Length: 375
Image (cartoon, rainbow, N blue to C red):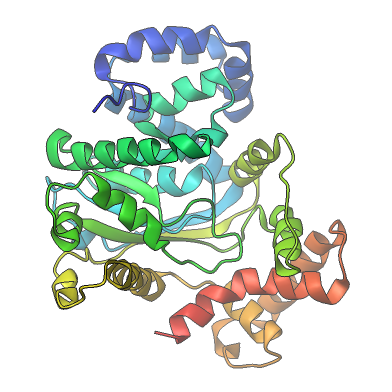
């Protein structure tokens, strides 16, 4: 299949694309904002000396992430890399809270620990600015065509499936992809079986399980003490809870992207689950395809819920939501007071009934606790 319109850039294209980026005034403004202490001319010379994707990630993306984390996070930790084998290629199926940072932080950890970084799936709805497309494709990103007309969606899914299978089996690269289309804005992390169905479309075998085993699926959970976009997502969650349709504003995704990068995140933890290939053997007896895919999704979710790092904000929200003190030993009185003040500030600008917006906000933080309790 032809993947030219969705694939990341190759090493041979890096120098040309960097030249294009440097000619963009907006790109210069972004760099001067993120790295104010570095004169742009000095940054430009650093960029012009780069001629591989790996160099671009280590010399541009990593320093930018270090700077962003120092400004907006209270520490990044990780666990589970001991479950991975170097030289093996994985399909990382991940929780999705932040448009940019989820995949970037996972790759940051992989690079630090001596693994090859993964290619990143990103929706074309986020690719409205041409220089941003160049930037992300230099960072091993490939495009998921979400905005196709209905009659082209099957063809788009076939191309995406073909690219994922080709990348892992033939190119020998890992891939990061969210467990469902769009972010888990309500904090309830669930894998959509449709994404597993898509993986299978261009698999090598007539057996769904054999195809999925060959992709070496590894669940990943990424938890944030504070979700920078929590208040921004409330209007959508409230409308949906009332059975109403929510229409995005024209630049809403870009606003969320910027807030996710800049906003307060507190502590962050990236948790790699156990790859599920061996666990898939237990599903051999399921003949109904939909039931089988739902069971695979459940396996992934169980691993994600088990490894998800719960923070004090999650336990506080759960106790507030349920008027309980079930997890009182997991947080201090000062942390409770701080979270309640944080919540009050965030809810001030949201136009909705007080009880409903409070409940919706608390569920966003409490759902990961509920999911772990349900294991």
